[in-house]
Length: 168
View 1 (cartoon, rainbow, N blue to C red):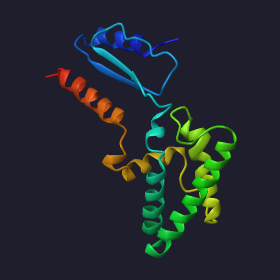
View 2: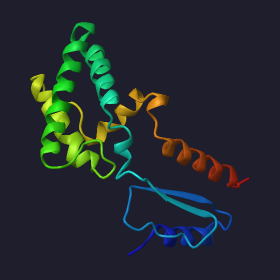
View 3: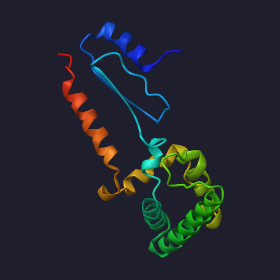
View 4: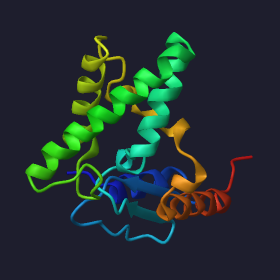
């Protein structure tokens, strides 16, 4: 099985000064790169969506999207539907000894997919937000919502990019 370090070493055959930053969902074992020019990082939380799947972010998304799509009169209804949907799933997960806010939750499969099905059901609309659209939630994240790890990773990516030697 090919691993990121193996791919990196292969690419370095063509570009010996290549530097790279590999960013992955949390894994049980984060493989070492075996090379100082390849930095590998796995999120501390289960997957990237765990960093945006926050109650306040979801409520802001509902309020903003409801207002944008249907006008300001609908923003409160969308927010209330989201609040009710979050509470229902949160209670169901609590019954199972789990939490949608846990770093161990697989945010997409265990929480967000079901949340948006329930949310749009409450509004009597087809599900308008699927996995491929979850990136839209990021625009409702405020700087104060950011986990410090996100800033740390972005800084590390920038540092790696600064070490790159552009082709002339």
